[in-house]
Length: 306
Image (cartoon, rainbow, N blue to C red; front, side):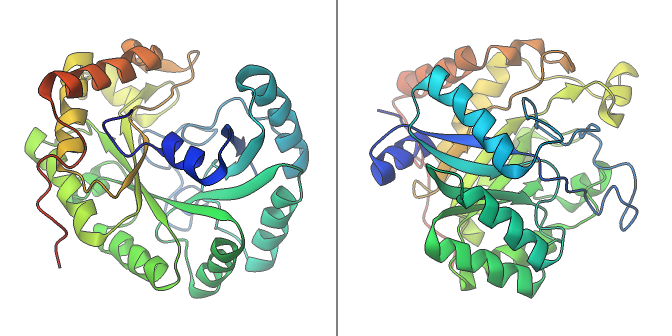
């Protein structure tokens, strides 16, 4: 058994079978790229969107899902699937367009839910109402990129929004019964260990339902890569990252679903840290460290902040 509230365990409880996420590129952009807020994006984001690899680009939503299903059935023996709208800001369009895309995904056989990734500043009321309708009819998560609970960091990495906009977005989602998973990056430039760990307390306080922890990856073609090559950014070694994740989990509300503990970087584009390519070794190290400590998620959690 995991020593944290693992997403895989929740899926088994809900569906009773192997469920896999299928990433979708629905052709979205981002206000931080199309000129609304900026044109360069965040410093860590490349030209294909952050973390979106292995997608059948140029195909429709249903075709992408059918292609990905074949791979996941063959590789993992999965029988149910969740369509994951991953690339860029997947609520950054009129509601009629969003509805057509989401409905197309749910029309694919054995697709039992949706995960929609976006930014906290791309959620007008009519979009939130649409998302709430899916939360009522299928298994649904909204993923919101926070990355850091510090405004100075958000400014330094070029996010184009502040912490307050994230907090407001979570509050509006909670009013509508939409479950929110926050994305957080550990190892961002200029943040101390104490500041990174304080992020767990922040998430506890605003009441998110899930979290994805990411290691800061330096990818080719990003502004972060330029900073790294100029010596302005240092990579985190594996042991430090493992210890930091365990410290973070110990402070995290045990009710929060942990959807990720380390990120996936495209092998061809990853500059650093190269040890992150060995994802399962990293996850095993985290499990072993929690066992060594005799601790688990929420071990030092003090209770929700009112």
